[in-house]
Amino acid sequence: MDPLAALLDGPRAHGAFLLRSVLRPPWSLRIEDRAPLTLVAVVTGHAWIVPDHGAPSRLVAGDIAIVRGPEPYLFADHPATPPQAVILPGQECRTPDGEHLTDLVDTGVRTWGSSTADGTAGGEQRSKTASESGGATRGEPGGESADNTASETGGAARGRSGGATHSEPGGESGDKAASETGGATRGQSGGETSGDTGGEANSETSVETVLLTGTYPAVGEVSRRLLAALPQVLVVRADEWDSPLVPLLAEEIGRDVPGQEAVLDRLLDLLLIAALRTWFARPDSAAPAWYRAHEDAVVGQALRLLQDQPDRPWTVAGLAAGTGVSRAALARRFTGTVGEPPMAYLAAWRLALAADLLRQHPDATIGAIARQVGYGSSFALSAAFKREYGRSPQQYRTRVPA
Image 1: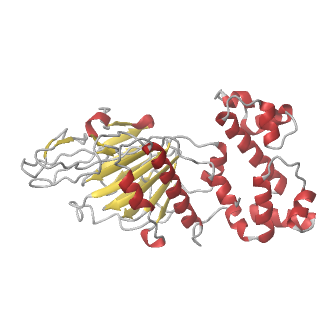
Image 2: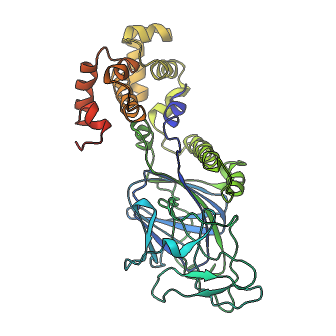
Image 3: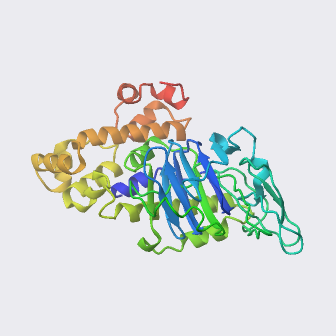
């Protein structure tokens, strides 16, 4: 298993929050859900991501944004649009004044939306305005169904109707969008910005934006090694890849059939892996050393041995024999490429594996987990584990704070 595959094996969706959002300007969402990892695909339209610390970045149709939590950020049709909703942990959506919004914007199967469009019956949607001050509103169809603006929450609001529908404002556009997915888009590729924040606030006021959002509610220690290598926000642009996964996810997200949650979890995993692989391969991505190491025949082989067989009693000499070089050559090359000596890398890898196994297998003994990751006894694992995480394995398993 190569280094990226080994780390990507960790962040597997399990009951992930998936949501389709349909938004019509002006809309702005303050994301404070503390989700560790969120992926957003822009199907149509555009959006801006504005981190609290960092330059804003513009997303357009076909772009994929990956956000590493837990830092908050603004997600809007334009950086200057004031927030109309705040997404909090646990899929909770409120107005800036604290009004609860989740129930107001549940418009379909995994579809969330609200509208302030003042339409009429007979093909147009009639909607109610929740407030002029920025509260999300709730559309009421009068004729053909139209979902209107929507938003996301890393999982907030899962509704009852299949695909997202489109709102047709009657008269002037007054949509005030409203919410979002606990993690929703953060689309800035490691510091890269796109577009100009000035002068276009009113240039696309009628352009509807459709988003697909998937939020991982929790990640393990192995996955944290991957997340530590990512910027807060990264973007894979539409012209960088050609993948059928987004259209497939868009088709599947509105279905309400047995087993659908498992289908969506796997699709989200595939999309995340494909997007990260594309981003890591970019020359300007500042990919971590362990990713670049797979290009080195010796170091790449050493990493595969350590990650595939952590239970073996590895030494530098044994690892050197497995890669066909001397101990000195391996130590020098590994440290220079990965940034730490091979035994230090192995120790951190073993402890991360042990941490995840403790919570994934609550009935397994500490001794059994110790042997599985290469420690000779439960005492040896416990001592190393407490040095690394500030808690004993049992305290970590039961989530006792450090």
